[in-house]
Length: 138
Image (cartoon, rainbow, N blue to C red; front, side, top):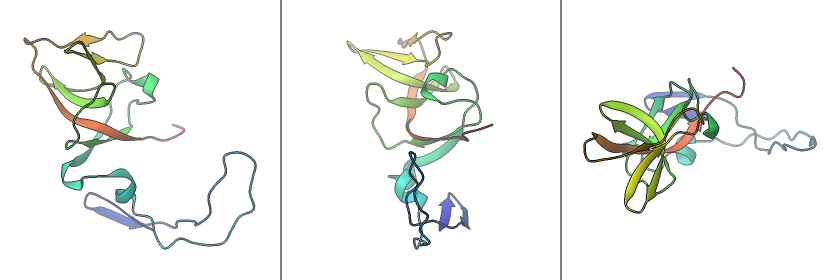
């Protein structure tokens, strides 16, 4: 399998069989010709980029420091999407809540308050988070 993200690419084996998360299944010795992660993770490559996370305000959504977000700028943000936004000059990752024509940025951490967007704030959505890449153990 050839993996290519941005300008990097490398080959790793791709096993044809599926791995069952329940009881073990006998192994099958077949290799698939290849898996292009771009086909699975990226809808619009010209508008998609990756960004590394710092902080724990989205820990309830299993997004924490060191994770890599795949962000698509071509998607229109919808209610409840996790977005990458610029808020008062800083990039933030939050859940977008739209209620009665009001916009809120929600953290997924009980210790962080929601933010109601008002006209005095510099705010715009940079892109919609489509995937999170993280290690299962750190």
